[in-house]
Amino acid sequence: MAEMARLSAKVYGRVQGVFFRYFVKNAAKNLGLKGYVRNLPRGDAVEVQSEGDKQQLEKLIEQLKIGPPGAWVNRVEIDWSGYSREFTDFSIRY
Image (tube, rainbow, N blue to C red; front, top):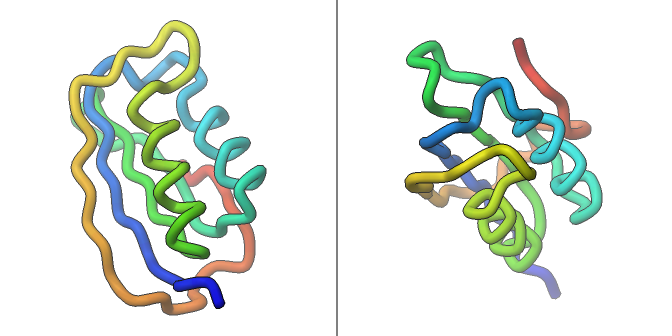
């Protein structure tokens, strides 16, 4: 049986204005994950909140470390917590 979990991630680098949020949304949906991605006010980071199968979340982390063409990622901060069933799909928040 799948281990369900919640991932909170902050991705730092050139991740705004390079379609990073759309990249994350597509990756998460392809992995069957739910949650959201949004730009953070500092201008150099995005926040990802996602829930689902922990193995799929770990695959998402690998995608976050790469990003889409045009992006560069300095670091990804990860925090794990319990699965809450808070989300019904994966969205971009503004």
